[in-house]
Length: 129
Picture 1: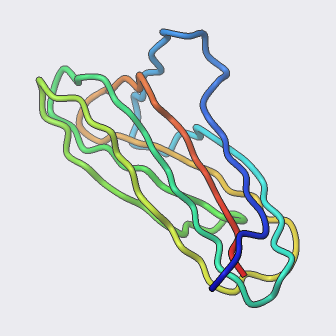
Picture 2: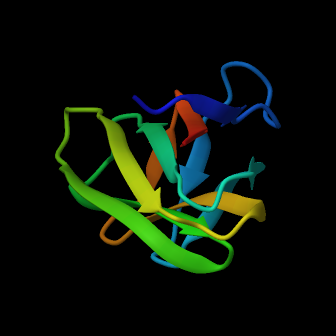
């Protein structure tokens, strides 16, 4: 049975409570960055990402993307149709990363309409060996 050998988490906290961050572009916008150390060559890195939205004015496609060491490793897309808001959550699993420090980033983009992120916006990662 694998054991957790490292854990880290990040949350969007560079905006005042109650502030809605508006995403206005199809270009990926950086939400979160964190690092994690992999100490075993035979291991798994699991990343759980969550992006909570407000109700958009127009229907739109929301895309969340996980990048590890500048390489896209996971993505999820969800169509958001007014009057709904959504929480987009997705899991990314990587096997046998090289030993060392790795940078994990969470990006978001929207195609058809501006959308507000009211939260939660979080990312957790753990290394299992």
